[in-house]
Length: 637
Image (cartoon, rainbow, N blue to C red; front, side, top):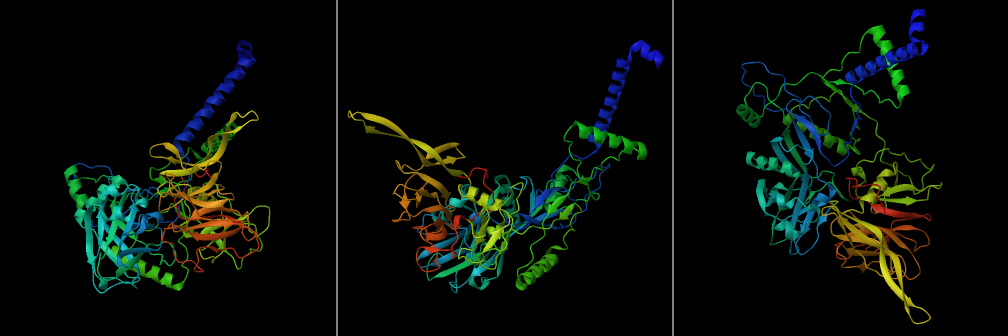
């Protein structure tokens, strides 16, 4: 050592040692990176949303011809909503429509009735009714194979049903898929039909709670497969188009009076996967007949190694890895069939005995028809769900609960669709709480997470299909006044004005042209190109409606005492508007019908009623209509 120090110098020796230690650390870290699974955020599946769910369904087993030489085992089927899980062959998806994609249209009207509880079809009071429903298929790959398909409709109202007539279900042309939420009777009634799904129904087949099943033939399933590339599929329900009154309604699963059993499209899907020991020609024949691939080995749940935050954490991890490797040997490589955890929430507890009995009956029937479902994979971990809202016993909570924040906004829970959410100071405290109630003011509850309210408010600025967004921007208005010499002095005013943005053409256009009057707090109708907003053009802050092209501006409220009417929001069927007003001295929630929108009968039989029953302040209501979040949740006017 003395000779080395004399020949090279102390500093040179120290630098060499540091270099060797650094190279060793880098080698250990590289090995860790090569053997540890990449960090992944656990997926969260919420069963309580009107999106695709699935139940494994076994396919008929066909033994493939033996190959001349061995080949590798087939890849497991991968669900688009679940991490890799071995499957017995195929998956049955139970797909429900979105709230703004199911409803009815009526002759003589320019809008539609999507978002309510009824799916009418038939003839009544000299008008023709057509049911309409669209299902989202965008979560499925375009090259998937559909080996079974059927639609289930549950009867809701049969009071207007006659003694004869025929009801049919038609698969509409794919030209109908775009702008579905804004289609009218004229558009849907004249839509090209690609196929009529059997059977044709008579009054003997219809009734409240009765389930009608429409089975697709092989040719009709081929039409469905083509729609996978489109991303959606739409249907029309036809009934009697004349004669005596003869009207029937199925359940949409949304709105007041529903049974909660809306339309279901059940698709048996075989996702793309190679078949071992067969040629390409034989593979097509086997797939058409229903091939069951051999399951792969059991998967292992592996939690990810967290990414180091800094160099000091890296060094500590490297030192620990070196110590473990010295004591017990090198790390075991991660197996090929590893998966990260999937966190799911359990199915909600039935609200009553009848619901529990019904679920048991459905489960029994499905087991008899399709066989026992595949057991839940090991990487599915059940989480304890946080309630969406907490019902109150009375009008004021005691003590005031603390809302739970959510880190990442997700879909709006379907249990909130149809409810009215609002802010109130009735619990005291520095910050208002978010409450929800039914449209008749009943079932008052506190929202446990304000993020759902904020998402619903932001979503109100978008059209039903989210192609358009209404927003407030200052418009420059040129005006002027005379000075003392009689000269006109030009003046420019900046006035808050409504504009809309078209995401398809990527352009924005001005909607309101009020002069000095301002416009703000806009909300888009879910069933029409119509916008509700607040303006002081007539003197006070009033509720107005206007069409997207700037036509049809109409003032809905008229206050003569300096009241404020603000924050409008349409009902899911577009027939009513909720807003807040201080006309009683306090901020309170009010509801009124939309002119010409065929509003439902109001609670007190008049056109305007209040939902607030306390002396506290309730304000900024939003009628929740959608489960899909807005394009950009941060853009709130």
